[in-house]
Image (tube, rainbow, N blue to C red):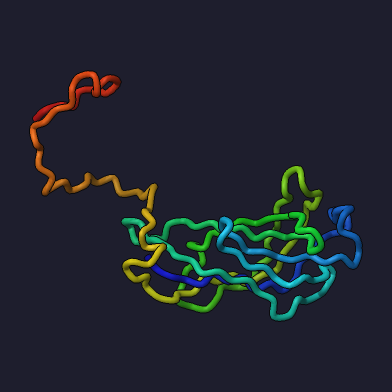
Length: 187
């Protein structure tokens, strides 16, 4: 397991007038939140979506990434949410995979993300977010840390598990306990 810091520097948001929700009047403010589950999240201060530049605005969260058997980092999705500042109403979202940005370097290039509307909750269709995303190396995770006990599932390793040290005791389950299972082939 490897510890990284996922960060998103936000330059500005663009909400075309034709997709601005009725609940978001001119002058109302929005926030951007980076979230994974309930525990890991960070949010910006409120900004007017019509501001040209949001200045030094960024969100960041710590990330633990696990390598699969081929040395690639397993996907770890986070959600960028555009929220109405007054009531937290979700306006639009974008999913960011932290593993795609994992690097020792500082950050990638500035990108413009097209956000997706939140089904049944938002009329925002064409929101754009201009950002720089990075996931910078912090350190190798130490044994015993909370995240290191997480088991990577779905790995693409199809080799058989080494069962040396597990002795066959010769005991067999009674037939009524095997109901519904096929009898294993004996060597």
